[in-house]
Length: 407
Image (cartoon, rainbow, N blue to C red; front, side):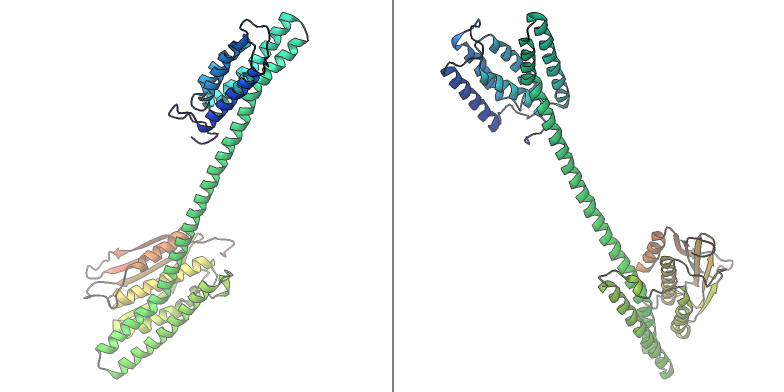
C-alpha cells in the first residue's frame, strides 16, 4: 500500500514502519516504568498493572494501517483502562498515533466522522468535569482531552487532504501530459496528411501529363507528334520541378511564414485548363471548357478556400486526363452567399484502361480538403438522357465567409 494512501491493505501483515513504532513505544513505556514515572499515582490498579495497557497499545500499533477503524475503537478502550492504572505517557502517545493513523489510512467515511466524534468527546469531557468538580482544573482536563483525541484526528485530516490533493494533481498532470502527447500525434498526422495532399496534387498532374505524352511519343511513329509530346513533357517537368521546390521551401521554413510562398489561387485556373488542353487534346480527344459563373468572379476568397478549390479542379483535370473518354471536360464554378460550388464533368467508359496509372489517393485528398473546410465532396457517375453517354461528375461545396460581398 502507498504511504499515505486511503485504501486498506488486503492482509493483516504489519507494515515495517508500524513495527518500528510499536517497538519504540513499548521500549519507551518500559523505560518510564523502570524509572518509576507514572501519570496517575494512587489509582485502583497500581504498580506493574500499567504494563497491560502499554502492551495492548503496542500491539494495536501493528494494525494501525491495516485495521484503522478497529484500532481507533480498541485504543480508546485501552486508554480508559490505562487511566485506572498509574498510567504511562507512552500509552497516551501511542493512542494519539492510533487516532492519527485511523483518519489517515481509514475509509473516507471514518476520516470524516472521527474528527467530529473526538471533538464532541472533548467538549463533553470539558462540560462534564466542570459540572462534577467545579474547579478551574476541569478546563485543563478538557483541553488535554482535546489535545489527545481531537488534535491527532485534525492533524490526520489535514495530512490526508494534502496527500489526496497531491495525488489528484499528479493524476491531472499525467492526464495533461497524455492529452499533450495525443495533440502532438494528431498534429503530426494532420501535417503528414497535408504534406501528402500537397505533394500529390502538385506533382500528380505534371507526372500524369508526362506519362501520357511519353506513351504517345513511344507509340506513334510521327516526328511532329513526338516533338509536340516532348515539348509538353519538358513543360510539365519544369512546372513540376518548380512546384517541388516550392514545397521544399515550405518544409524548410523554420519560421513558419508560409505567406511568403506563393499559393495557387483560382486566378490560375485558365492556365491550368490550358495545360490540360495541351496534355489531353492531341492524344486523348479531350476538350476543356471553363465556366466561371460567380457574380463576383474577381473577388478574392479566403486563402484556404482558394487553395482547396484550385487543388480540387487540378486533381479533377488530372483524373480526366488519365481516365476520361474522348469528349468535353467541363469545369463550372458558382457561388452563393455561403459556399463556393465546383462541378467538373467528363465522359467515361469505353476505354481499355487509363492513360496513366492511379492510386485513388486523389479522390481521398479532394474529400479531405473539403472536409477540413466543413464542406462537402462527391465523385460518382450520373445518369443522362442518352444511355450511350456516361458522365463522371465531381462536386464540391466549400463554405466561405460572406462579409459585404467579399470573403
